[in-house]
Length: 207
Image (cartoon, rainbow, N blue to C red; front, side, top):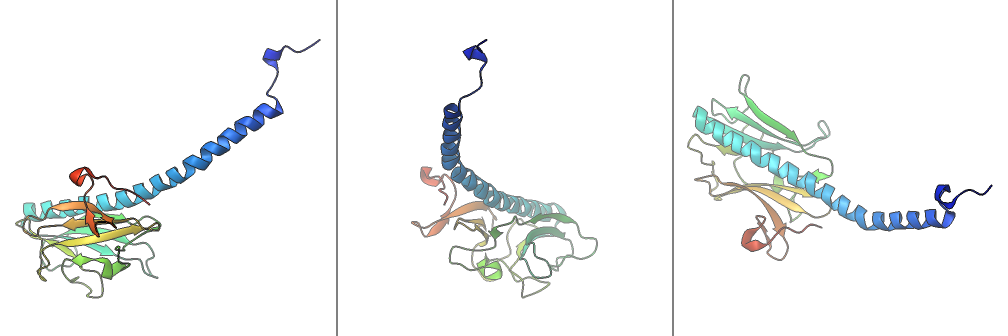
């Protein structure tokens, strides 16, 4: 008795065609997926840093103290970099016992403290103030009780920079120091500067 065509399985040719189509789709979709993953890691750490800065600034205003945000680069003793924010109630620039920690964010794998010029860790930071606990550490953002940013070197702004391993660069910039506006910006080679997404209708592009 012959088996009806409707209940027979796929032929070898049909299976090969399906596999070929799946391979083509993967060929075109995997690079886009990897780009999306890189974007999410870099965007995520920059946006979380901006949130910590806003929390520190608001806490400084509410408690009439000082809000501190600092980066801690990876080291042999502590291989995971992080960003920390705390409420500096005695205004000495140090995290003392009893002072509230506002948040800590670990830097994802394959994301670095780095600027577009290739400077890393401490050298990648623009502006801000010397670290009160350890001068060898990167400069620190100090938000004052009036909402302003401490600016001892009269740079007029400060920024923490982040990069992935595909030459995409973001910064969290505080400017001007008087009102301490916090904004995430991306490096643009043609502009030779960082810019906010959507400025003049221009969207960020990614490597």
